Image (tube, rainbow, N blue to C red):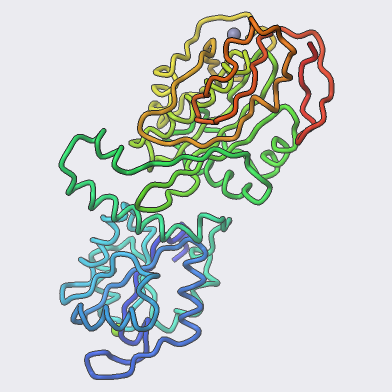
Length: 407
Ligand SMILES: [Mg+2]
Ligand SMILES: [Zn+2]
């Protein structure tokens, strides 16, 4: 088979595959160090693992716990039904296409049964277990901080789904019950792989459909008038991981949102809206207009809705004059105004304004915003530079050596 689509979940048989021996026959069923290393390494690569085993559920589950393997496994299917059914349930519940599922079993008849009913599932014999790590379909191009966390994210996601189906109340009330917390921070060098992965994986909620290479991202992070930001989300069930990326070109009169992309998994939590609202609020505090790139693809209509709903339009504005357009890119615009903090989530974000706006020694009467809490809940407040047009810039010493307007 030459399919090198990445495997997203490997389903293990137990007897004589994950462990040695047969549990029902009273064998001691140890897990070899080699197989243990495979399980741990696949987990680190962000490949989920599950079980399809013909065994009595209780003793088999107890044995997995005893062996320290239970935590590695999501949705284990232990019982006496056909294995193809077990594998299908795992794929359905995770929402994975069959060609991203792999199945490993020592019994040729079990592999044949799965292959017959699920021809896209890739089947491996147990003697291939140790060699899996070297196969291209088990070797993601990038391994990120979130890869190691992926299992926890799915486990949290499954608990969240269960809680949601049992929840008595409106979806708004459920959202509030999640205790969502979002963090927006500058991307660091170590996170480039994760940012790149986000721009690759976010086709539905990607404003331009443009994928940025790691080298391009590195250049933007190093550029004094660009900001590359990463949003992460957590709730009471656990982490969602990095769910959004923002690329901004910051100029005194105009903040240019070159990319907003969020994970499809968090659309229902209003993550895209919350991030966009925060960007608009930051631009408003800096006294700048916001311009956003949008390029329609066949999948990102939802992102356009998010932009329009936030008040961005095609209307002309003088600030667009020095902003050359690129092929196929629409340029949306809003005269940024302060935004309220999002209702259903707590936002903790870096303050970009302080780094991009020089504080003028304005007379007291012109400082209406002083001492007001800002929308993201920072207790301290920095005065906002009211000027829109500036004639020259000077180098100003701080983190990036950002060019800031002289007044
Ligand atoms: Mg077996
Ligand atoms: Zn404008």
